[in-house]
Length: 266
Ligand SMILES: [Zn+2]
Ligand SMILES: [Zn+2]
Image (cartoon, rainbow, N blue to C red; front, side, top):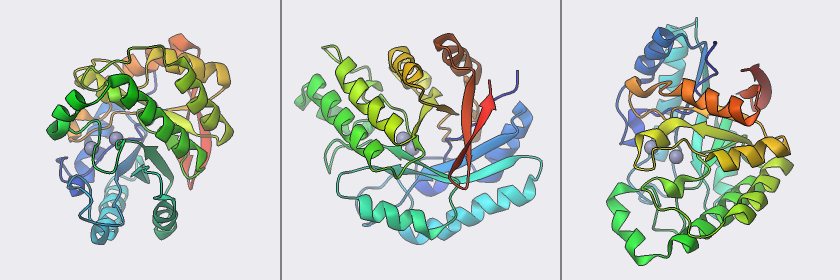
């Protein structure tokens, strides 16, 4: 079975990943990939917003690192992308970022449910104690829906991230998923089938089978991502991810070049 492209991976510029793009590319070739994409955490307008992303003045360096990997490994298709944090009010900034380099795609991700709390931040785990789990899931999916509605993203990242540490919704979230997926469908966003969840407390791929089933029914495309933060994580658990997608009914995934989708047989 040919491996679908791994379109979600990071670089040390985000300050919580190790290994250069050339190391990720080498690993991808070892594993038999024909295509990967770098999607490191994009800068915010204010560099002091948080400490787990590249600074704005490093954006050119990021592009250079990816270009170097493209030159060193011509046998591997390497896409240039970003994982962009969506927060309400940041749309203008995201448009500006989008115009600065010829990105192949932008992954829109929600990590922040308020200006100061990213639900997946292990250093802010105690914040969950102050919050109602269901209220967090609702706020999260409300923002994810807004992210899809902007039409700024080709892919929506790890769609049920709040489960990372095992905080599961206490009520049926189907209406939240439906609203989000209808927005994704309307704006032709693909869902990132992201294996990083298997390496976290939730021990489950993002998004859940339920979300993927709803997405399949609506005809929403998917991509695959390891969310690698070190070269050894490239393509991790891809067989499991492809198996999940196929069991839901998917026979194709998508890849992106110059922000245009192309289909990939699974
Ligand atoms: Zn990260
Ligand atoms: Zn992310």
